[in-house]
Image (cartoon, rainbow over all chains, first blue to last red; front, side, top):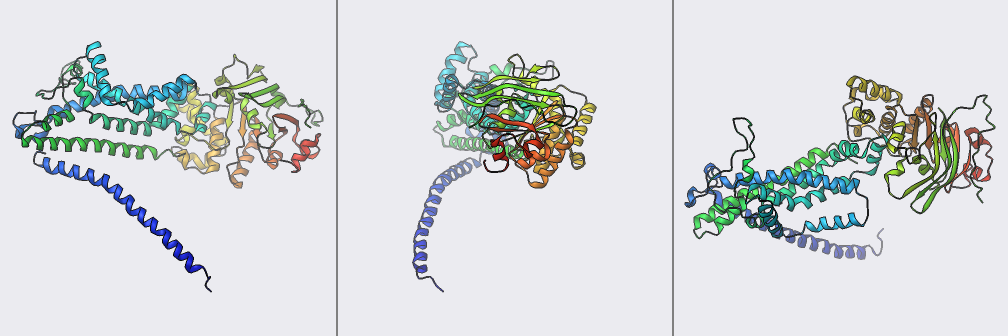
Length: 307
Length: 271
């Protein structure tokens, strides 16, 4: 027995559903603009640079002859700068976030600090470069060194690390804290035995995403005076003779991947453009690899934690 | 109209010996900022007895319970007035000179929702011992086993001590939290509606456990379930709007309450 209005209702639903279909198409188009742009950029870099992507490219210094130029000093420089960045930004950022989240009294002072930290994440990176030039390079006399660059990028990603750590700590339910305190734990015991371990997936993700941003930064590194052409490596951090560890490399001049790329793209010869494309491919690959690592770590570490 | 809460000693208690006093709240008031949540409560916790706090939600029973381990100190703006005398040493638990951590080391708590740490079963129970600086592996293992046995979880957990606590069922998790609270030999065990998140079977096992534990430890339990209070407790306190309306031996409270309000609540005419 058919309801008299059933046909009308079906008609109405069909008409409404047309909007569903329309939006699905529109949304897909919008998404494709982003995805296709990236894919075509990445593919073009890969195609243009493919010829140059061989072992020698990674083990050669830059050269006036495009075919012999490589990115050895650039990737070593990037790696060392990232190392300094991580070593500085992680403890500073995590400690600040723990203090703000667990220890600091909630008053207008901490509110202002909180707002400022969020704003710092939006400060253009060149401003950090100018600050670092005045402070690290000249005031502290660190020169145009790996140390200066690492400290600069550490400042740059510090807000990211702080915000990520705070978010991660906030997502820990209050009853876990109360459980620890109820057993007689002090604030520090609660932080070190519970809050830090349980928020480590979030902290790690934040740190790696910050680092992925830092590895591509060019402006602040140029501002503090990284060299654009460098045909030697910093002194090795490890040696065969006592004391085995050396920190001379911290004060060494350097270059990094994006600067090497920038240098090549500004050359008139077409051959250098392939070098730039190849270097860009490597840089994007490094960034994607770091993001992939972040996702994997978060997945691995979060497996044991569910609230 | 509510009459001001008065200390009602279980004078009509028929047992020859009155149990010793473990703790005594004296004129205890508590404020969340400007809001007074507890009004001049005076009440005794008898040693190695179960005392139940009943009353409609929002009456302050959890607030009262959380005074005993100074949980309120974790949040700014909270204020106590009056005292809780803790025996045998007659310490005022709420005293400014008394460290809340010291209080929590002597008085353990089990929460409404099972809240095991995302660690192994073993580490959950061992945590209180580690906080107290116990290092010896043997001693920790012994204590963990003892606590799990007392919480009636040993048989189910002994072969999976390194498993994550989250892999246990809800009732097992709550027993794990009880084991965790017991491992440090507390003088008082606080239960804040420990079965409200559990199914009836798990609830029964927790109630049995509470019943068996009272030989060893003084228990204060908040429950919104009157049958539960009647089943597990020796003494019952009925609270309403932050006041202690009536306190006495459980049987008397349930069979012939002295106050009309208590009777209305217990018979379900109110709340």
